[in-house]
View 1: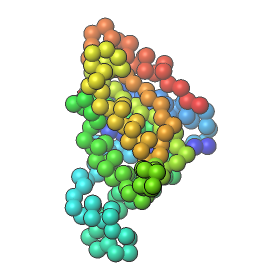
View 2: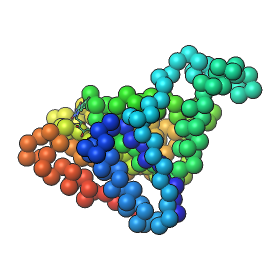
View 3: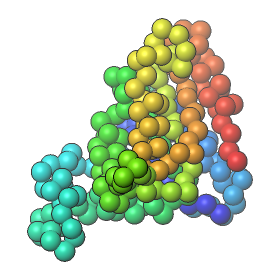
Length: 200
Ligand SMILES: Cc1cc2nc3c(=O)[nH]c(=O)nc-3n(C[C@H](O)[C@H](O)[C@H](O)COP(=O)(O)O)c2cc1C
């Protein structure tokens, strides 16, 4: 039995390829681990606030010294970190927007990059504190980025993978539907991505 966290950042609902793929991964997880539970965080329906001085100040202030405003501001971040720590498997929908991730997902990452909670620096350098997780990065794009001339433009997979690794999530699989706007490639893009799903 696993606890699954599905993070959605596409606003396109049923038309969204990254949501379809994320759901397909979750179906496979439920088959492999019957009785698993799924929590959905839809960042498009419920976006998190951009970090302001209040949030950043509270990140670096011990809980007992925070002002009332700081304590209130940090709650959404604390909840997101607790939810992440509770999950065994994270399915992170990350469609490509302007060669990178949607800003809603970027803001979420800002909220879960918490010094002392999700990472810390020691003599040996940075150490991720989110341990024993499996993550799937689920990405979708109009163009093709896994190979060829546009590979260097992919700021989705390298970024999200390194971010997750930085906070301690190193067991990461990538599921990619690409070329969704490219004639010839587009007809089989989703099918190919579905076929690449491997859950163990
Ligand atoms: C605002 C916006 C920006 C996009 N930027 C890119 C891009 O830089 N490169 C690309 O290949 N596709 C881009 N696309 C196409 C999407 O990546 C593609 O439609 C994908 O399927 C979106 O994910 P979704 O189906 O889960 O919503 C963009 C789409 C939108 C709506």
